[in-house]
Image 1 (tube, rainbow over the protein chains, first blue to last red):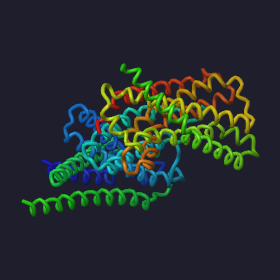
Image 2: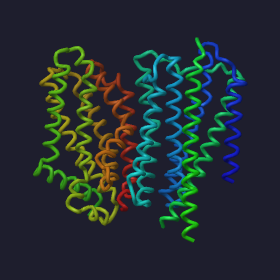
Image 3: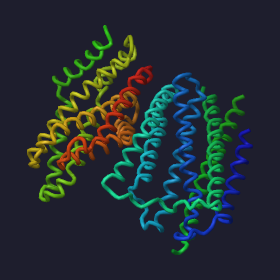
Image 4: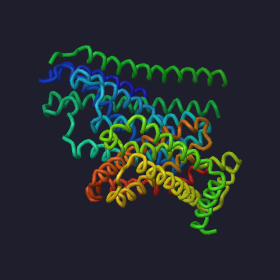
Length: 215
Length: 41
Length: 225
């Protein structure tokens, strides 16, 4: 089952890669550097999925105290931070030639940056608590607080950037809506979500094995 | 605007490298655990 | 003992301990003075730049003091081996949270009043009409910081890297509160009425509500062990 997931993800990534360079057109204003979007956006969106699953798993754990829920939350957090970190890095690489800067404090970048640091803290908390049961409980609480914070982060940052200030530069590349851009993006999005699922499945399996060994 | 293929390569290369490293990390740890378990049973 | 009385008992105990030892209070006052001097050295000459960064600087002072105060929330229990006492306390443990929150709020507001007073005096700031609005913003912002801070303080109380982890966990989560308070303070100090910064105030109210409710609901879980 997990193996199939892995093969599907791999296939998806391969197809996505081919489409990003074969099907997707050369962007008019930015040139080929815009192709970075086909990894950058899926990474970020997949990380949102990861953090959403983390939030749900955290609630489930607090209510039912099933170790599996905790393992899913843990794995999801790990993969989520990995993906969002990569998303920020690729976004930065994309931004340098197009915006002329590695970073800018616009609404989206700032929000995602905060997200990254929040969930990195989640992983740090896991790392410092030795007792697995306590770690599960505390991280579940943190996971819920973080999830509830996300809308607050979104609004506060958005208002900070748009009120009394002209909207800052858009992210690199807008949407023309053409299918030759949409399909590579969707395929890559699906591929990265599959990859997320595969990584989480393997990580959960690993966590369960570790728990059995140390029990 | 010039194509900046270097940046494209950097972005895709970094992504591939990091994801591959994580995958290998998972595989390796699972293999190590399997060895421990087999040795115990 | 009723819920409210238990909460108040905790708050009263903490404040009484603080009043006698004044450990935290002294640290906070000294720290605030230090902050004041540093800002004077770097920005004192240029009135315009000072006015521009004042809201941020003020709240930086508040936040850093808050980190100090909140981080020590369960210090007494930890140092005197009373942590188990908390775990074994009968009834709804969220009363402990409430008591700790009230205690923290009192301490933080006291220090903030002091810091604000010092800033007004040393930087010759005219609060005037801004004061009532400012009080509202400071109260709401402090509540936000204290609400999550008290919860996280309990979570990190018995962890190895407590002093490092506590601010690392708290600050990203508090970004909305920090943004809202700084921008609202900025608006108020520029002479705008409270209505002009209403959206920030509403955000603070929403944030405070979420933080307090979630903390009340989950504090029992944290004190399970």
